[in-house]
Length: 339
Length: 155
Image 1 (spheres, each protein chain N blue to C red):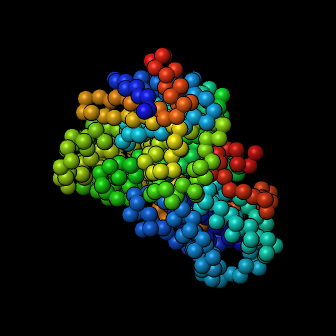
Image 2 (cartoon, chains in turn cyan, brown):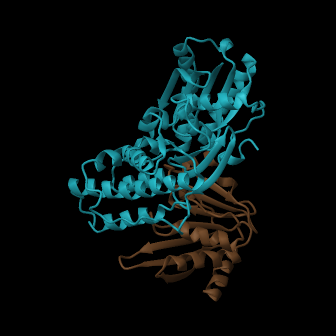
């Protein structure tokens, strides 16, 4: 079974061909990061335009690299949300046109469902139900995943997403965009205990997150320099201390969710899952609690279309096919996607 | 001449309480612009505003990623964040001029919209002066001035 996956929800134009939901034949990603870096964030209008320019060459390249032709495919899977509406529209329109002209079934995929499916590209021993931490620029959610389309939300951020906190902290320190990789890199030279930033744990037992107060604490700390350039060593310490505050709470609550639900496996997904400190921290804490942390390779954590094809395969096999009237939605909760 | 009101805010609860008061008094088409740095308390204000509008959604989360979050309440609340926009050219992409219709718009980082902000609006400046925060409200247009007068009576 060959699935073409298409992903345009944010700043990557991506297409991939995946066989049987498992074997990646091609995985093409055209990143717009450089285009948006000068603005310190995504510019929606620019993103849509760049997607329009990239989408057909990227799909062509994915097909050529896979060695397959359009008429050999079994279905087209595409991200229908959540994301930037103008960006999503480009991928969904291209997918509909391909599905219609080639007579292929169309499968609408939730972007988060795509992220969680990345692990199936690399492992076939994931035990259900598992605890899923989705952590990216727009999401910080904990789910219990019981099977295809069976998701229960256990916790979520009450204000900012973790990736957003990284981006905003990087911006207020003048470190550039995106914030995650640069803070992760600078943090490796810093002391994570140097600055005591707050850990927001909320009520006992809560699996929700809050990162807004942490962002403000970093801002107040940086303000104390009164506009004088922050010495390099201090930047490293601030980055390390901020990262420790984020990672500690993410790890603690995710492991807590696995203990509370009795799930053995913990999967993390989303762009922040590429973060070295989070990967190391979760792997260690899961091991201590008798749990297993399963983390996709960094290239499959950030936005890509192979994960969309992998999710599309599972949905297709479960009979969850979309009509050609599929419309993208900016806000699309995963637990309500196929209900 | 716009009507203004300035208040000291010594705790986040006060920002929230003021938001809630505005939410209870706001009418259809009410347009609120929130000015202030990262961490000033803009989202805290909107959380109060949502409560005052009778929004039942558990959490009012940051709209930075999706740009517009919509909540059903006594009046529909559109929580808009222009932080990631580079300037007015991007506004058409999110259908900026369509908001708020008969609902209420709360716009963070309205500076990005430049001259495309409506003439009738309630500007809210949350400022940090080294010791604490103050909040300044300025109303433009009849309906917003009436709203501000009502807020003054309750604050």
